[in-house]
Length: 158
Image (tube, rainbow, N blue to C red; front, side, top):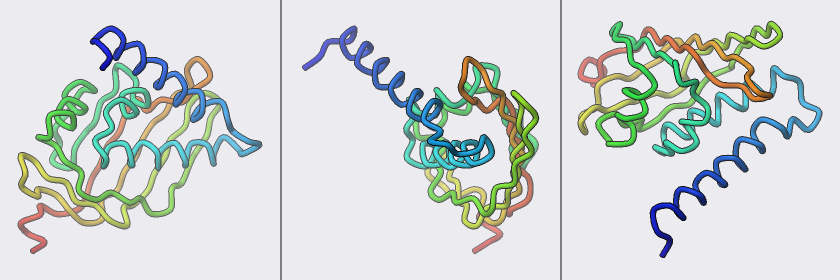
């Protein structure tokens, strides 16, 4: 059984490997396709509560504006996912539109499926509209801003 330091080293090595695989292996794909796949990877990590992967894809200064207008920092957002108080039960994007400008890109999509719970209670569902801003840093893309709007409180959808 690895001790804390050994576990941290293994986690760091895994994270570096995953980041390299996501960032470096474009396999001839366009930046637009890389960004679309990166967003899908980010959403899978959030649904699976894989905070290690999610942390690597969010800039330290990341900010999320929720459908209700609340502003969350990276630590607040991923902290809620890590402790289970924020739980994405389903999140599938529809077609992802990308506007790419060198080291900055804007992504926009409407969910084909979305359901999130807070403290174990479904709170928001429906077709949300997302606008995300990514920046390319040190050869890899990270999300810096995200805003979601639309959808419905889960209690209204029942």
